[in-house]
Length: 265
Picture (cartoon, rainbow, N blue to C red):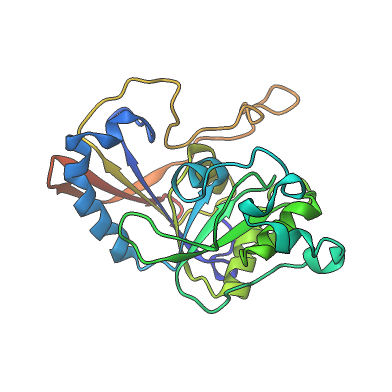
């Protein structure tokens, strides 16, 4: 585990089918909707300062999808003209940018390659109050995307040269924005990244009363293909982690809330 004093407290909270799928058409069925009200109350009870997701999940839920062209090639209708005009100030662009550093409600998107498209610097979801967007980037991002974010007054931080340095990202979220509690809500590979880095303090699973059966959709924890679980000598590089069951609660609509903590706690 990383030093919890250097980063926010991280709660991974996920809705899943009985067979462990976290995406699919079953989320839009009456049976799933019957559990949503309870799930919303559970989320509010965490009193998190920020919700954090990977780029794919953010693109599906929070942003305006994904860019089809790099920002320097977009027109004013995409909201980038003011940002692109600032591209000459490369040194300034490559400093962490806190557009709204004193709020208590953030959406943090791990978008290391700069793929997300935005129309503004705040988003709403599922009746929650507006949340300010923070992008987590790596240093190999192009200046055009940085200018694009600045033009929209979207905050961003750098964490790693070419690959995500998750402990550094979490430390910056705490020191720059004052974030003390993060609600991690996917996707599967993002959850895996936190797990592997030892940055999960709680794992909360709301099980929806249905089975999806789609083996191609995302699971709760998906190891990326590059992390096959073996090192260069063919030996196991990642051992399974164990958790302790802390609480179980049946929810209206036949859902189930499971709360786990790492076995090392």
